[in-house]
Length: 254
Ligand SMILES: NC(=O)c1ccc[n+]([C@@H]2O[C@H](COP(=O)([O-])OP(=O)(O)OC[C@H]3O[C@@H](n4cnc5c(N)ncnc54)[C@H](O)[C@@H]3O)[C@@H](O)[C@H]2O)c1
Image (tube, rainbow, N blue to C red; front, side):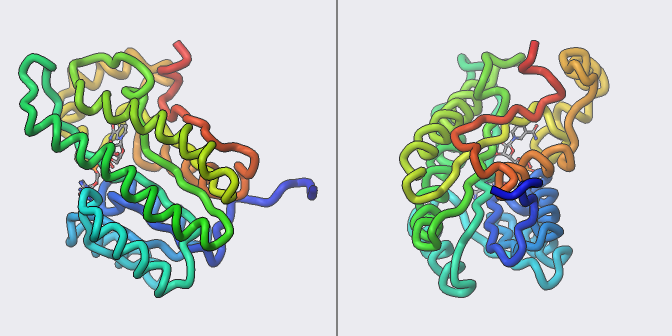
């Protein structure tokens, strides 16, 4: 074993980022590219995905795919592996929210959230894992949430159910795929300023209320996610698997 242990680089690795056109996905896509990876930006939003891939230049490429569509997910992952020879990293990050009290939540909204946040995560992890296994191993980083680790601060049952599922899918896959040298971890962000949270962050009184709950006294920014995700995606975390890393300004420490 060499000291200091290498390293946070992803040179020549092929990294897939789902939800790569969104706030957290875009920030992580940039960080992966700066770490030396070729980054596949996957999203249903074609203009957002295309614009992120364009920002990455030669290191970026976009693919329009709906993570809830089994055939499309399998086809896209296989096509990426064929084109690039391998997949080394999956940042399994696409997600949606339908905030509502449980008494008012429609089954349509419940199903929509389950489809993307839970089934979509499963489909992408399963499809990518086949190729990671074929490459002799790799890393998967799932985006959970502190709402998957707690009862939360406002009613949001479908989202919380799916993020709780992401937490335990992460642990299960870490054990199941360890023999293939696939490490599976998750980040659990608190509130991060992205399109998903515009409805909250555009209300100063709500922002003040949430900031008061955070020991570091601020909301997260997409760039706050990049170091933790790169750590879990790279060899820097070589002996870490099945871990849920809160990226939350200390909220879960309380
Ligand atoms: N923003 C937060 O406060 C926060 C906190 C905890 C966890 N998260 C999680 O972080 C992840 C990224 O969210 P974000 O905050 O960047 O939001 P965002 O809305 O900016 O990005 C989400 C992206 O996912 C894409 N997407 C949605 N459904 C898809 C589908 N079916 N197939 C492919 N792509 C799809 C969207 O088009 C969008 O580009 C999500 O899993 C979210 O649940 C966000």
